[in-house]
Length: 453
Image 1: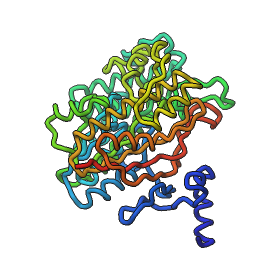
Image 2: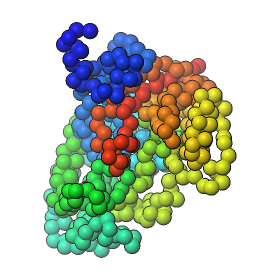
Image 3: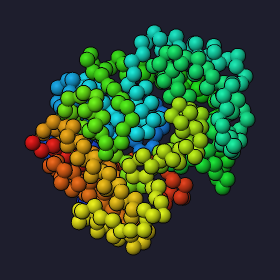
């Protein structure tokens, strides 16, 4: 290694990355290499990790993966082909669908989370540019005379989450958005604009993974003013959606399918009458890492009624549908369970000795992902690649190599395991409130799975 190269990676790489390859220097790149081999276990630092271009910026969403990953997979495995069937079975905020559309493919997304489906659909929607331009003036004109609105979240703790001015302004914006309910695509677009500002105008901390109002922060939060922020967001998002639409090749299309859990995907795919998928790219939930409902709580107070998620009680009941959730009953936590895979069961036993509930959470996660791989095996055409992006977890102080376990679960369900490599996560803007000591995943692992004939 030259002195210049050594200086480069020392400047670019966090100290924690050095342990991933026994102290070897991670590979610093502008983007993941499409041509040429990637070493098994190689760790990348992607300098050009911009993830907020075009509609990728729409709406913060916990656990996003960077567009570089689906872009790499699309170029590597589909080359210059157009019109291929690309699936993201845990679509989240739609990163894969945006990149699939830009690459000229037919992208399909599935998710149990209703807000995720809404965001993904809007990010790739087609609204004529002339309609987007006229919409700005219409929204501003409709909002200007409204001092208040008719809607209020039906929760007893409303004043804890929002000050009086925020409630009045959000209520007015809510009513304006509903005036466009007869125009489905426009209404969904405005709904995402509305939802995207709610955390910032609330009393809740903007950056934490879990929604809470801090009483210990030495600099108390000053909520943003809702009205100008909403108008600004409508302008920004309409510009971005217009530019996205201009760059999408003719024939490309995307569709967000009805709600389904990753383990029951095959029935949905068959019911939609879709052909075998040519490529799948996803970042599934981690083990007990992101409570999506808790993260979206204040947004759901205002827009969750359309999914029956407008109260904390309803939200808590819904959480069990997410793979990786931490909801455990007293009966479930009592017994040690096994997946039937030696490495997985070894870690389950180790965690069980320290925390029975977390051991059950881990067992359920691996069991459900096992079912998910079985479903994906029936959806993908023979020889198709399934690119899975996952971070490892630490449960009860036990470091669990989640990516290794998932690779072996996939292998026993008809996948051949190709290369596995990692990249350093550089945008850790959503944290748990633990003084920076927890809730941060340092690396995402990329597992290349090939559907065997």
